[in-house]
Image (cartoon, rainbow, N blue to C red):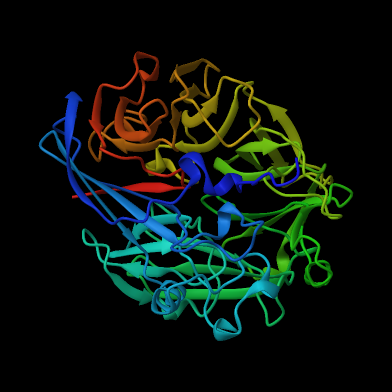
Length: 462
């Protein structure tokens, strides 16, 4: 209707930013296990000011960190903005200055300035707590206080929000995309940070085309780069069309390379048009690489190349098999679960190796959206699935696995997550027994306000 006010969906409900920075001691019900000791750090987009772009995209908001500190059955909470150069510049001017995915909307005062938001993931490696997003270098913050320590300049360029930590070597394996002088380029980097925190390798190469490459896969000996047709185009953006868009007519590729090899040896396998934000894990067996991924038929959350609305679609867990010894470059695809899902996780002590237990956030309502109402456990050996579905419109974050002890059996431990309580417009920190998800949370810590929907988190043990 004429005069109707249209609210950007990423600025309303529990997507809306929370602009206070708080410290709370939380009331607990049930039991927070005594053996669970450390901090769940989570991050997500939380724009400091009203965005300049009326088509503001969720992926471009300022990063805000949320820390749930657990000790002796008690839980405290602290949240802080990631004080990137972008955040500092906008804070100084008291308004939004950057255009997000539309650089044409950037204020002249911010032209050429750093636009990093550090809003996608946070992890601990080699004594450093790193806030990550895929367009910039890692941004280090202090454990506990989350005070800014600045960019980790040794990376010398873009780094994925999803590095993989090798449990055997302690190395952090990573990549970057959109690498090069020109925005939205097809350039990529492959990198390694050793167990002491020193970047020991950064090698550049060209992908088949420019794409949003959110995550990747690593096995004991190989690295895999998915280049799927959520394409980037500066030419398109300059015409006022989407910088990133779904182009299913382009083929999908996954580059496979030995971790110790030169980037010139990448072998490009092919797959029908699909999209993967997040894999679960991958391992090697009998001359093959076997990977479990959350596969979409089409990229969600993004428009078509002509600017028309994109498709509503949800991911399902799918197994990809790469025959390294065969003559075919086709990837074998096999559906392994029929519940809509996102944010697959596992016991990361087995990263890159054979494993049995997977965990994810699920959607039992068929909403075909990023709103997820369930926590699920899938036994990959038996195919048996356990689900706990929240009711009343309550929605969950990604579940994060923490082992009961360093030498506990695979999957013996807890899942932690943050659940939005829709009727009360606030959130809870919840704990599950990882192998008995169907029982529901065994302990909860209650927030006096909500934690906005975000992306990823990780557990940092004491």
